[in-house]
Image 1 (cartoon, helix red, strand yellow):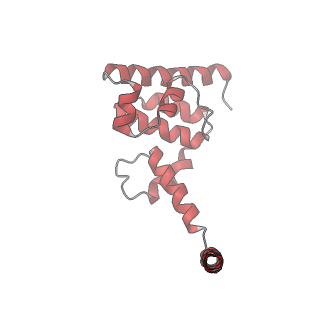
Image 2 (cartoon, rainbow, N blue to C red):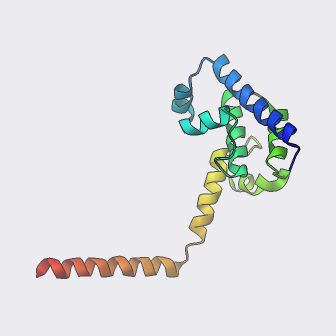
Length: 149
């Protein structure tokens, strides 16, 4: 991982830039939550420089989307954060490639969440679905049986 002084400066730099950009637009944290659908807790933690509450890829994707929403253009700071989080450049490309609405060439927080959601859906096999359905049917039969007694 990078030198701790570089990590602190990258974290402080991006956090300060985001706070500055939000205030420059005249937005409170609550107003930003309303317009962007970001969680208030995430905004507050990112702006305080706490990046440890989510896995690094999610933090980086959130930072990129947050910068886009505020139109900061702080690509150099984002690149420093990517290196600080030990994320290779190609780490997020699979999420970008699978996102049909990603026409800007960037990967956002929602793109990553959608990719993870689609992967979890792909892993459920027909056998799992049939087993779950059989369980529901059995439960329904038990309820009907005991309700007639």
